[in-house]
Length: 366
Image 1 (cartoon, rainbow, N blue to C red):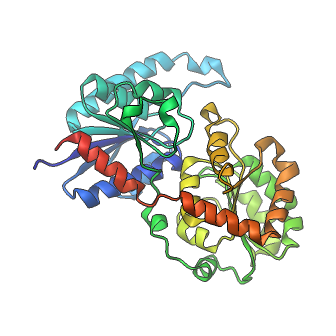
Image 2: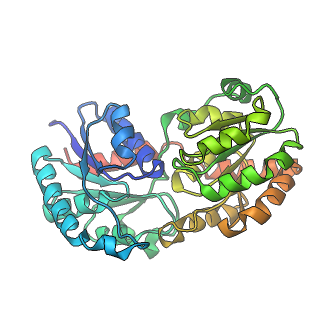
Image 3: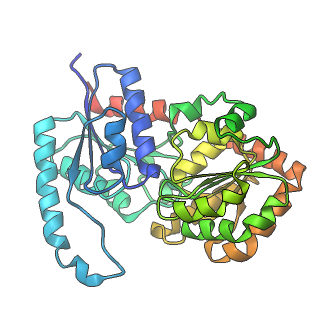
């Protein structure tokens, strides 16, 4: 049996990067002979996070269409052409048996080039509403691994495999207790703990809302673990200083297994990774979907859980007026917390990484 060579392309946010890493580790568990190469976008988060996990990554000079300043797009056609040429060069040199796209800027040019070279490709579509790029790529993809039912409205039905969305092994195998989580964060108060997390880059509207109602919510005798992203970190750190034994502020939390273990209630964006992790953690959640996500996919993701009685949804434009009241209602309704936790747990898929890795091995045929 010859070694298995696989390119994994994409990134941009933790919602693309961490599933990609989970699949990479699953491939190595199933096929220790696997040779992996990541391809990302220069200047994006993957160029830091992937090497930290011990994997090689090549960066492409690529960016998306800038809707806020159309003049910045003048050079875009040239960049796309150069990216396509560079993608072909990378593929020729590495000679993969399969190429996997996880979403993000680098995913489309690499998979598109690979398909033109007749290399088997697999799409890992994390969201419940597929983006334009993946819909185009799906025509020639060998398989499309999805996290939600009903995706045949976007993709050829015979190519769809319902795998769930892969999460980090530390979360899929999570065995931390609540006390271990609270102790890790240095929380002295053993009361209810609220985890506020706006995705890997933070969430301005959530941060501003928590900032505004912090004094009010602290009257409820709670703890707060607050992941702010880099831009809001200093402001939040100053804001939480008066409650330093009960409010813990971080720009980024790597050890999310401890955070989920410590948490009793979560306030979160509705990215696919967050949803997959929260189903496994089974902690009652208030989602505030990012309103500018492509095709508003975060709202669609959150709605799929609300439909199952597993979450509360607060629209981003209403976060300043509704988040506090929804949080207080949930804090004081133990039956609703229990019901949401049970419904989340019923939706959890813990082995998505293995399911996707097995499909990659199948289409690679080596």
